[in-house]
Image 1 (cartoon, rainbow, N blue to C red):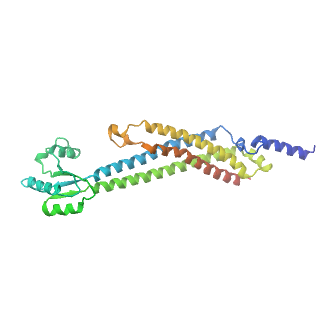
Image 2 (cartoon, rainbow, N blue to C red):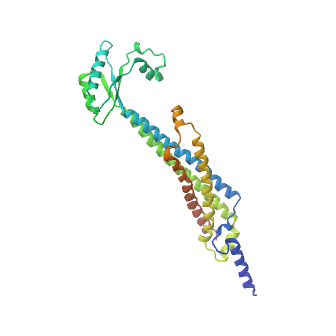
Image 3 (tube, helix red, strand yellow):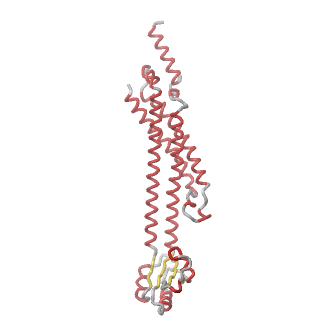
Length: 309
């Protein structure tokens, strides 16, 4: 046998040993363990864990703002300010107007202890409400869409001087604006998490390519194209990213599930979590992580192989 034929047989055996006889098991040229494998798994798991909390924060903030806005929209408040001698008569006049207003329920004059409770966060629990010129507050529930807030406001100004209608719009607008801002912040956080995961996976892929430089040169000598070599790394790193992200997502969902429920304390942080079908949203994170791993590894592999000849 000629030396050239012997060399060709050796190269053929090396090719089959690296990529398999069927030519499709390209992962043999990628180290199954080591620093790059651990880095890819850890980065994907950590980023997925953080993504679960960013998603839960955005959804919880939106739910809280919508609940507060809905509660404020279900009623309006009438504030009656008048000299102490005329306070009772003007309050009674305002009550008569509210009783004849279409689209509303029964108005309720808040007692002094309830007013004191509302003012306690600003003036303390021992404030003597009866000794201060505190206006009378009337809670008016909205019963139907026939309610005309502007019409009622004009009627109060004309027939009950000192009575002011508050439809809580100045409270609802900041809540809606804050909810939109936090949702946007959550979306930006998810994008940054995906970008960070992609950068870490690309770094790990480049490290693996650099460590297998001699193997890549041999593969090129026997006719392997850059796309074939890159595909081996893409498959392996995409698989690692998906596994790591799945583990991080499950840990994140378990941590969110262990948080106290909103009904236990009613606070914001106690309501941080998913509701109903929202628990299915974190399951998309491993799919997105696999896509990020695919794109990052493909870009890094082709860039690295194009620079090394």
